[in-house]
Every structure is written in C-alpha cells, then in structure tokens.
Image (cartoon, rainbow, N blue to C red; front, side, top):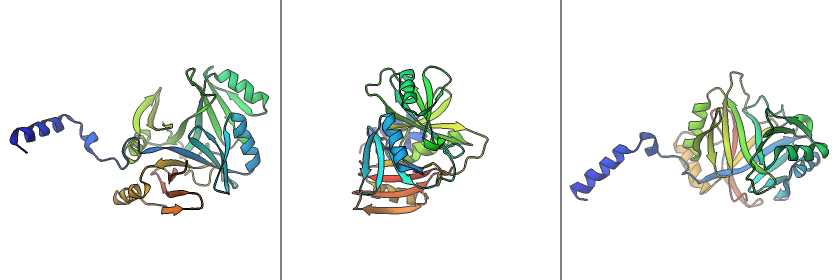
Length: 262
C-alpha cells in the first residue's frame, strides 16, 4: 500500500465517529424479532383471544402452540405466571392496525376486554385474566389488518438499555415521540425510564422475548467472548428443527435466541 493511500484511509477513518467503529456483536440486519413467549393458565382461551385479534394459529413441533402475525409469533406455555406483564421489565407489547376505532369495536363485539387510549389513534386490549396489556396504535397506511409493532420495556436507565440493544443486536437507535427506541427487523424495542423497580421477566406473563439470529452458534461465541453469560448454552433442537440459546439482559429481560424458528 503506498503512502498516499495510507494517508487517505487514515483521513477517512478520522471522520467516522468512534462509536461506529466499535464492533457490534450482531451486524445490523442479522437479528430480527422472532417471538414473544407467554406463560398462560389456559392455552385454549389464549389461542381464541389471539385468533380474535387476527393471528394465525400455528404449532412449533408437536408441543408448543401459538399464533403468528406475519413473521412474529406469540407462543404459549401453560403455567401459572408469578404476575402480570405490568410490573416486570417487559411492561407490554404493541400492534399496528389501519383503524384503531374499527378494530376496537370489532374486538369489543367479540367479547375481548378493551380500553380507550389517550386519543383516537390508540387503544388497549387485555389477554385473558388481564395478564398482558396489548397496546394498539394506528397506521393508516398498513396493508394488512394487524401487524406486530413493539415490545415496551420499563427500566431505570432507558438510554443505557437502548445502547445495549444497539451493540448486542445491531438494533438501530431512534425516537418515537418521547420514547427512546431501537429497531430490529420486525419490531421496535421501546424504552421508558421508570423510578419504580421492575422485576425480571422470567416467570411473569410475558416470560421472554425471542430474536432470530443469523449464524447463531458464532453469535453465541461472540457473546461469551464479550462477557455475556449464556443462561442456556447453544444447542440444536432437531425435534423442533431449530437451534437456540438463552441470555438475560442487564435489566432482567429473558431473551431466547433462535435460528430457523420460522
């Protein structure tokens, strides 16, 4: 390499912010929202609820049931949750619809518990037993009846959490109104600062969230090299046709990492 080229490369690098030179554990686009896993007392009642919301029933292997909204799955595990999602770090999840009022009227007529939002473009629906509050937001340009939109996390330091998800999963930091956000394919991660202590998600109604990861085995090695503990080490699950691992973020969100879940 000649001297001129070396000087040119150095000059270009000098113009790039330091943060962009720090290696992310997952490159942008290598992680996408895969699923939200709920602990529910009644599988059939919850399947009926999510089907009424517009989800398509599905089964993972021969044992895990749920519904899917596009590429994002809501998976159901029979269990007595230790508490509702509210009060845990995973406070609630959210969806987009083309018209909130029409959707709320339809769900109310179907017997679902609904709640008005702060304005006509927002509403809430509650899963059986009021265990998960589901936020509904309007996107008039949406081409499908309903689409998964966000996971809303409540923590003491929203800025630090945003930075952690950007570094770990290649999520793109941003803002939605007053909220800090980080976007991966298929979902927005929304962060709210709260002074009220939030308990870890594991065992609550939203037990964990799941990301689809390209080259999961290599990603797990990067996590361990960076000092991130694997709660469940990388393993292949041939009966489900997937590979998986589990980690917990520094604020107590249980996260399943998958390859080939779809």
